[in-house]
Image 1 (cartoon, rainbow, N blue to C red):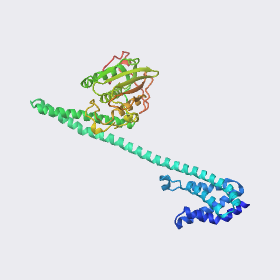
Image 2 (image 1 turned 90 degrees about the horizontal axis):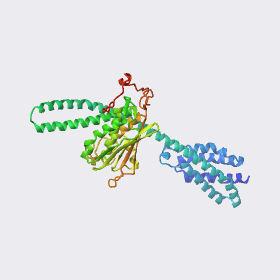
Image 3 (image 1 turned 180 degrees about the vertical axis):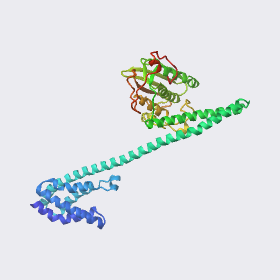
Image 4 (image 1 turned 30 degrees about the horizontal axis):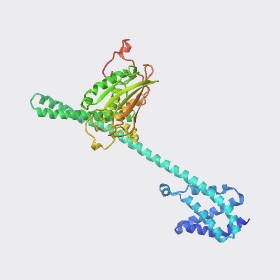
Length: 424
C-alpha cells in the first residue's frame, strides 16, 4: 500500500520532529520518543485494519496521565500534543512526500488523529472531573469537621460560661441586698447596670446552648395542646413597651386558623416567634409598622410577620438563617435587642428555624431587596402543621419515637382552659 510506504518513509522524521518540538530535556525526550514510536506502530495497524480500537490502549494511558500540577493548573497537555501532532504531520507530509502521496496519506491519517484527539479530550475531561470531585470531597470533609468543631466549641463555651455567670449573679444579688438597706443611690445604679449586663449575657449563653442543641440533634420538645392566638397575644404584650419607645405600630390580626388548637411545644414556638418579631422591630426604623397575620392552609397554618423596614437583599435571604450571620458591618450596629439595627450574636433566626423545623414546619423570608431610603420591608412566612390529634405525634426531625402525652386535664376529662403562659 502506498500509504504504508509513505508512513515508513516519514517515520524517523516524524518521531524526531515531534519529539524535539514537544519535549524538552534529554531525559524527558527519551521517554516521549518511546511513546511516539509506540503510537506510530499502532497508527500503522489502524490504517491497515481500519479498526480504531488499536489506538484505544495508548489513548487511554495518555488521557489518564495528567500530573497533579496539570490538573491543578487546568492544563490540557495531551490534547495539545495531539493537536500539534496533527499539524506537524501535515507539514512533514507536505515537505517530504510527493503531492499525490501526501494527499493520500493525510486522507487516511488525519481522520484517525482527529478521532484520537476527541478520545483523549474525553479521557482528560473525565480525569479532571474525577480530580475536582475528589478535591470537593476533601473540602466538604474539612468543612464538616470545622462545623463540628465549631458546634463543640459553642457547647463547651456556653456551659463553661454559665458557672462564672451564676457566681457573678449570686454575689451581685448579695451586694444589692446590702446596698438596698443603705442610701447609696449611685451604688444602686451601678448594681442595676451590672444586673442588666448579666441578664443580657445569660440570654446570649442560652441562645448558644439552644444552637448547640439544634446542631447536635438534641433539641427536646414538650409537646402539648396550644392555641396560636395565645402565642400571638403574648407577643403583642411582650413588645408593647419596645414598640412604643420606637413609635412603631405592632398590628396583630386574628385570622382563619389562629383559634385552632394544635399540638406543639408552646414555649419553643413562642421563642421562635419572639425572635422573628424582634428581628422585624430591629430592622424597621422608628414610626414603622410590624404586622402579624396568617391563614389556614390544607394541613398547615401559616403565620406571617411583615415589616416596613430596610429589607433584605436576595443573596442574604437564606444567609440570615445561618448561625452567627450578621448583615452589614457589626461595628456600625447599635446595642440593644430592639434598637434600630441593634447588634447581637446572630443566633435568633437560626434558632427560630431550628425550632420550627423540629415541629415539621418551615420558615422563609420574602423581600424586594435592601434599601434604607425606600424601605421595601420584609415578610417572614412560618408554616406549622395542624396536628390536632394527640394520637398523631408530631414527627420531630431532631429525635425519634416522640409521642405527645395527654395533659392531666385531658386525663380527668376536663377542658383545658386558655392561658397566657407560653409554656402552657
